[in-house]
Image (spheres, rainbow, N blue to C red):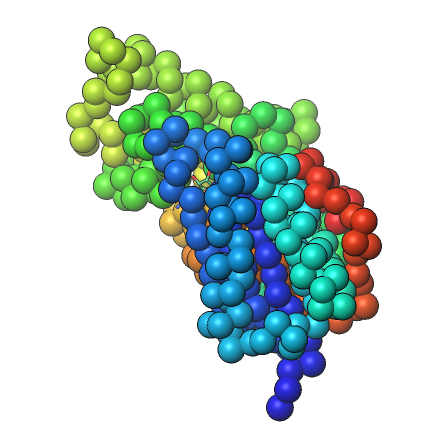
Length: 345
Ligand SMILES: Nc1ncnc2c1ncn2[C@@H]1O[C@H](COP(=O)(O)OP(=O)(O)OP(=O)(O)O)[C@@H](O)[C@H]1O
Ligand SMILES: [Mg+2]
């Protein structure tokens, strides 16, 4: 039987070019091309990201359609991440998506990249029920968002400085682990003792649900300096066992704060459905610690599949699908916005 709602999702907000096809709520393909050009610079270079999106957008969309067995003419709508993200990167996906929707005469649906991270928990069953509390921990954001219904977002706390993923990446860089560092820190932490070194837990008691991760990052820097763990040219010179302990201890301090604040918010707002999304939701310690804390408190906790944690278009397509069913579409005059707010989604 022919599908009623076939959505093409497109994601180009940072350094992943991704396209996905979802038909009647079933994900048929999710192609992700991660740009390796940035690795030599230790971080994403915006101009290079836009150029790579420009080069890969058409082949990636073609591949997503072929893998899904979907012809362009079968598409019901095109859903695209509008922001937040790098402006030049976003513009590639947004302009391509608008042109395709215009050419096919189907609705264009703008998606907030942070709402897409939240909806990464709505791709596969079981999905959270409303009201639910969402912790989004990514490279650029750390947010606690309360949702009472589809597309209703109440931001109850966010980071005042570094995002959790950014702290992982910066600490990994200090430890000589390369970019992006989150997965490397996670892997090395499994071999280390999380209680070996005490790093601060910044709880910011004056505002219960705001986060701050710059202090933890600085504490790691001072630890390296005070213990002469840098060679004369400034590169890290850390014995392997200590490196594993450093990773485990740093990770424990970040995870402690994330779990405690989320559980405090769950208690304060009386919400027993907890969903975690964004790149850092792939972290093995965050998964196990949050699962244990939620079970103790009688809450259900949801994590996306690992491939839906970092940027991907599957999460864009599921938002597009749910918005399409509600008759939502965006004007073709709408533009990418680098600092798009979750509350404006
Ligand atoms: N296993 C892991 N443990 C910790 N951090 C991880 C892990 N895997 C990925 N990350 C981190 O996730 C981040 C990337 O996530 P994501 O792609 O969601 O961020 P982004 O799209 O760059 O930022 P944003 O979504 O805020 O715009 C990086 O900081 C990376 O280090
Ligand atoms: Mg992201």
